[in-house]
Length: 84
Image 1 (cartoon, rainbow, N blue to C red):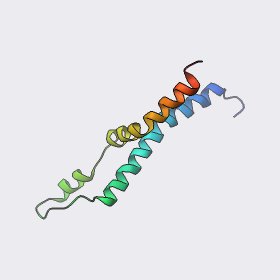
Image 2: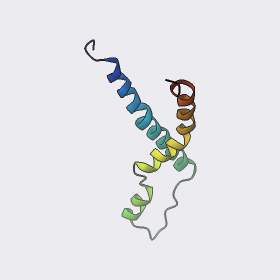
Image 3: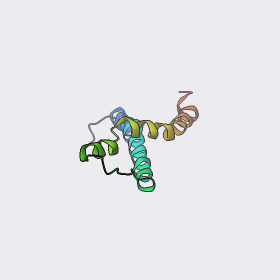
Image 4: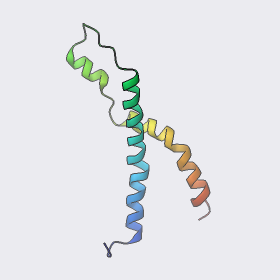
C-alpha cells in the first residue's frame, strides 16, 4: 500500500463516486418503487414477457441516480474544485 501514489487512490475514489454510487442510488430507488407499485401480471402474459417487464438494465438506474446525485456533484465542484 505504501507504493501506491495518492493520485491512484483519487482515481479509485472518483470511479466509485461517479459511477458506482449513482447506480446504487438509482437501483435502490427502483427497488423501492417496485415494492410500492408492483407490476400487475395479466393472465395472458407469458413468463418471458413478465420477466422482460421487470428487467431494468444498467442505464435506467444509472440515469435516475445521476438525477439525484447531479446537484450534489455540481455543488461539490463549485465549492471545492472550481478554483483549483
